[in-house]
Image 1 (cartoon, one colour):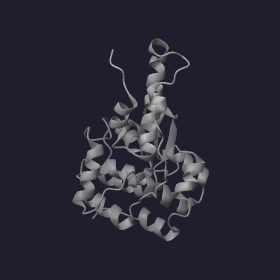
Image 2: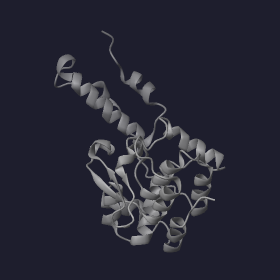
Image 3: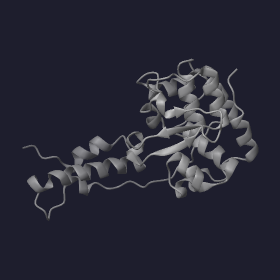
Image 4: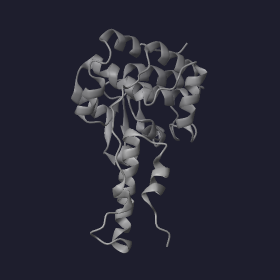
Length: 230
């Protein structure tokens, strides 16, 4: 049996730093603990538990300005435009949108009834079902493009890559989680209700306040919600 050493795991982890490295270590600890009962004496630490954690430095979130958001949507292919509009104007995670079916997107003449259902099975880490309102900006795009009666919201299986290409076509550098962070920032500036924004985004009030409170002005929020394609 070949023994895994700390050096082996360090070589595996060397390209990651900060929070990402620490998350990888936590996963390895769980994996080694699973095998611990069979191969490692109970009193002895597993090799994964000997790995040092890195310092986590919180980074500034990046958001799209209203002008940048328009450039992104102007460059989107017709079949991909609804996907990117949902990402920008609902705050739903990209991974959650990729799991969604069009039956979960429910426009309605009454704005209070228009919503998107994020099912528990499709939510991040299955955090639970939530109802996300279809706000006027998103409603305008869905009305313009039309909502398919069935099928996946993601027009193809590589939308994670497509969003980075979209930024390149628009002459922009891709911003990690830029669509979700943009929604959170502008939505907070608009309604100033941490708990409602947290509910809509499937996040904790503490995280919403930390990242999105006073990130932009009310005027900028109005401009963002007025974005339409040419």
